Amino acid sequence: MENVANDPAPTGVELPATPPRRRTALEGLLEVPADADAAELRDLATRQAAALRREDEVHRVLVQVVLGGGSLDALCAHVAGLLDASVVVTTTDGRVVAEAGTAAGLQAARSSGAFDRTGRLVVEREPIGERARERAGERAGERAGEPAWLRRALVQIVAGSVEEGRLAAFTTDRELGPTDIHLLERAATVAALALAREQAVSAVESKYRAEFLRDALAGRAGADHEALTHAESLGWRVASRFVVVAAETDEDDTATTRSGEEVRTLQQRFTRAWVRAVGARDPYAPVMGFSQEVVALLPVAADADTDQVMAQVAEIAGVVRGDGGGGRRTFSTGVSRVVTSMSGLPAAYDEALKAVAVGRQVHGDSALTHVDGLGIYRLLALVPDSADLRRFVTDALGPLATDDVAEHADLRRTLEVLIDTNLNVAETSRVLFFHYNTLRYRIAKLERMLGPFTTDPQLRLTLALALKVLQMRGLKR
Image 1: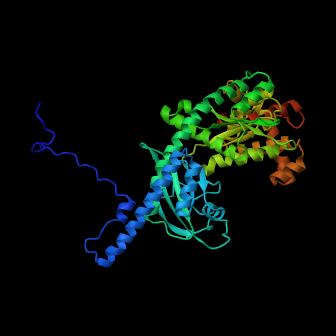
Image 2 (image 1 turned 180 degrees about the vertical axis):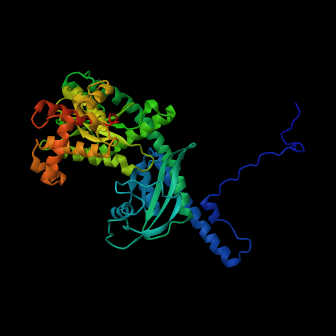
């Protein structure tokens, strides 16, 4: 066979240009100027020798991290030591998964504009590379203890062609130069290995944890002592008092235009966010993601009331939401009553799911609802046909069932407050800021439209239910 490997391209055929190789920061540092004199060459040789020594040290440290298991915490600690800086690793949407550095340095970084109030790195506005300095603590509403200039540099963590996160360094006492960027780029390769390792281990652990929790939620985990022992063998500790928290993204994945792979990736990211947010409060609390929701069993103190429980869940949800930035999807959260045994888990799980579904229907997306806060909505949500509910509203409220006339919404509000105050005219006037005579006029108008609800308790009940149905999202015309 004729060897054509070194033959020139045929006449008239243009070969595709080879893409230029990206020059590293270290190569730029070691470049020799064509017109350099002796002094410049000596200075350059000194800098080259220092750069090579540092390169050798970086290589040795990173190899040590890899051989030692390659954890992200170890990587951050070593890079922070090499750079004399604070170092963080985040997900692609900015959630911090590992960090190292002095307490003062990390605090300066957290109080800068690089992070939002939930502690998320604002990746959508933080550029790759070195960032110009800014005064630490100048974020709105915060004050720095001592004036200090914060400098930061970010690189991407890439595995193959997929971005896995960001590696960032922060300093307050020196510039971050090309060699620092080069170090971060090399460390990002180790970070990619560490993330891949963690994800592989997590996938195996998640399989067994998911099977157990699914059985427990369905009441198939056996006796309480058996279920608790099994949970401990998986690294979980179920508290003597806990609530079930269910979180679902508000986007309907069954009717989405996203690919199946993208939906799975987003759900995995959502699950990891909940695992980290809950783990920061209790590393042994069970948290698991399923195809549609994330479920967590949060411990509850013996003296905690519902408001305190909801405040705790709201704080965790706020961390997961991260101000809605970084490509996050909105989600709604439901909370069950307190559970004191594993045998009560199936009923509590059903309560949490009901709180999610009905809470979203009543309050809209991003709802946070306790099952006890649903009230009559729990019964209304059992009606399978929303058309029946709409007909009920129309029959009860008549013309007030729609907003065809601007006055209708105002009259419905008056009727709602009247019923809520048990027809207390004085209290209703105070709540609505109406004059007493104005309210009397409105009551008379409402009775002409709806009937004698002030004297007919059954009619008042019907109107109260119709108003509740009308508040449920998706039913109001």
